Amino acid sequence: MASKQPAINNRLLDLLPDDVLSRLRPHLEPISLVANQSIQEPGEPADYVFFPIRGLISLVALTSDGDSIEVGMIGNEGMFGVAAVLGDDAPTQRAMVQLPGGALRMPSRMLREQLRVHDEFEAIVHRYVLLTLNTAAQTAACNRLHLLEQRLARWLLLAHDRADGDTFPMTHEFLGMMLGVRRAGVTVAAQTFQADGKIIYNHGTMTILDREGLEAVSCDCYDYIQSEQARLVGQSAMQTPKT
Image 1 (cartoon, rainbow, N blue to C red):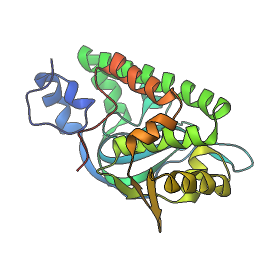
Image 2: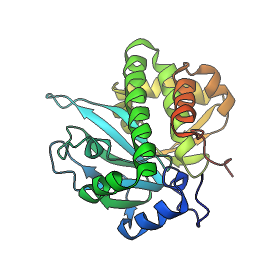
Image 3: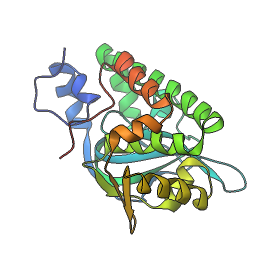
Image 4: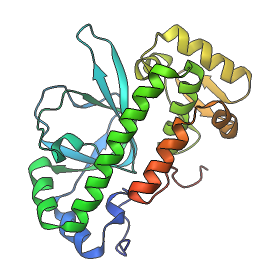
């Protein structure tokens, strides 16, 4: 049963019943998410988990030679801290803020304590962990098997779902890092989308003009991620309609 308390605006927490949510609130600390901020470096202690309210956190895998690729994306539909749920307090990925906003953070130790005493919270978080693992596996397959244009469309749709509106900050360098390709490749694909009227990219700002057009270009990985989110945590990947 969904909470009847005032919405927290993290949709994972807002799935909780009133009594569970009221017990969690004292342990949730509001913080700001600043663009390009690192909230977790590989191997560092994961002292907190984060429940975004606005903004976008990317989970990035790194190689020994310095290359990187995004393996997860967290907005207000979820949480950053799956490793802490599983008992790993020193995850090997980097978590960085892609779109600025705000979040509620909770000490990792407190999260595990609350999971032990609240069955409803444990059930929802464990389903979200499964969603995260399934999404990471699908993303890995997508990055290996699908064309760059398909992957870029999929990524833009997921980012658009988690942005405040149709326009949000984004650079080609950042897109290249997220997709694991050189900047030049992203530039060509983005220019094609712009020429087709799907997006406008100007001075580090991305505007989605034709969402249906992006959906037509994207591989079915986007639909898979949406369907898994609905199946496992009972919510659409989409936020409210953009204004």
